[in-house]
Length: 218
Image (cartoon, rainbow, N blue to C red; front, top):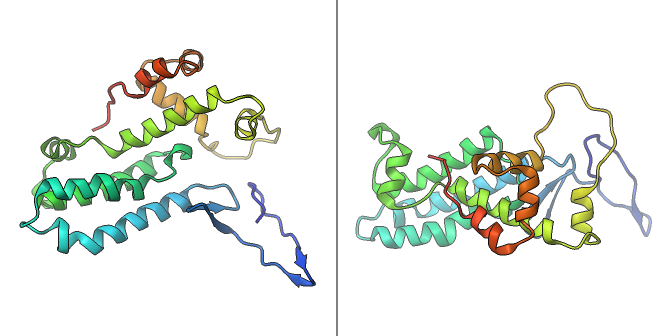
């Protein structure tokens, strides 16, 4: 695989046999795309969560004989990790956020035995089940990872890549939202500036306070 915004055809042979060039490749359970687009992986996460949901919606989630406590334990311990695995590196757009929330609420509404037709708001469903928006967990994952990056030694490969600046001509159209811009937006919601965040992240205890502050999502 060759990763980059532009596609490149390469020829690799082993013992005279050509090796197929792939557009996607799963590495450590994460689906990588040759163009660096994360939507392929995020879509795969949502589809995995959907398969789990459909496999247990009648046998567990929809069973009145099974307590909400048990159903929510499955939600927290199995469903949520499947849905947001690897979310530390995601760039979450409004479209992606909506798709994740849709999958999340499908599970939670099933637990309560209601549908969208009942016109009960998401915030009321979560309040009844005493559960926070799943987007909050994603943002905490991302802020924790940001803190790890800040505290890493400058010689660490992942930090070198993160801090690198690629020189290239800006393409036409709306620029792609970067991971840094995503983090900056989360910090703004918490009233923390970029420069202040870099200082706070160096102290694990102070950064933990920033990570676990209140969220504004409904």
